[in-house]
Length: 259
Image (cartoon, rainbow, N blue to C red; front, side):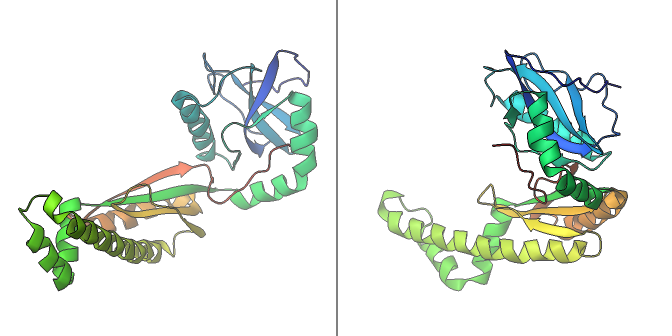
């Protein structure tokens, strides 16, 4: 277990803050965070809450893929065991005194209440993507006009059918958006009895079928997996679906950082 860090000030370092968690949490000695080499992770306490932090050089460049991954992995690992309020990537304060005064003490009541609400829960994300050929066949089978347009341009030079191809592409995009809304609702309905909250996310790919965050009790993870497994069977060959988590509750918690 890493000991609580003594409050002090360093002129050449700053404090990177990952998130807020209960003060009685034990941090593994081998936990590492952002930086090159990865920094040792410790806690700074204030009453019943603590900040998960590491010391970094003041001029340390942040934003490498490794740093983003370290930030998320550390918080997600913590969220699998205890309630955690994640901070967005890149939260840096001057020193540990600022962590206490400007972050923990200034928000103690709100943080304590939020941690109590998250007790036993974590975020999970349902991600699904359409099979390109399957969804195209489905869309064309449901729209005679689009099917005729697709047949009309098939095998013809792209330059000669540019406008028609653009029109068809726009129609297909709109059809996928409509199906995405329907399929996202199907997932929400299937999980309604298992989760506390939903948070739809913006699609990250044009063929994405579902990108839905849910807040659920970690004890119900197997039930979530079973429900998603049933959907995967129903959608076999049409949509590939997976469940990610447990994760820190990024989509359900907004943690303010010091100005």
